[in-house]
Image 1 (cartoon, helix red, strand yellow):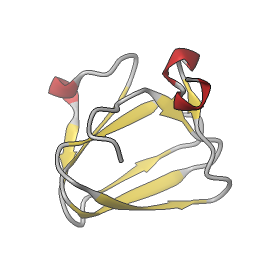
Image 2 (cartoon, rainbow, N blue to C red; image 1 turned 135 degrees about the vertical axis):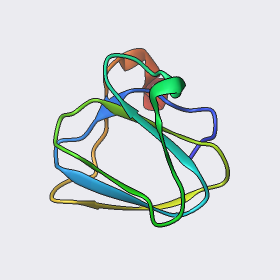
Image 3 (cartoon, one colour; image 1 turned 90 degrees about the horizontal axis):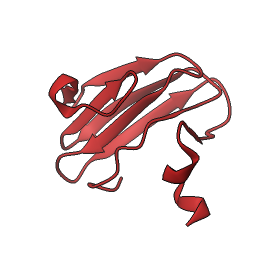
Image 4 (cartoon, one colour; image 1 turned 45 degrees about the vertical axis):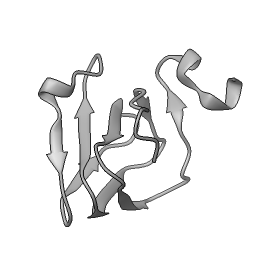
Length: 86
């Protein structure tokens, strides 16, 4: 995961992400606001419903495990943030 990336996005399926190692900031809502983020360390996890906009940013080198009930797709809230279009 890129340490500088925190673009808001959503997935088509519900997901649960667990931090295996490192420190991850997680947030949801209308904008990226690190002051309102939840900091997750090893064994920390977050459950996100399908199509709920959210973002994540690695504070350190981080390894995560993602479980989902469907495809591992990503839809960016602002298409300008999509690295596939750069």
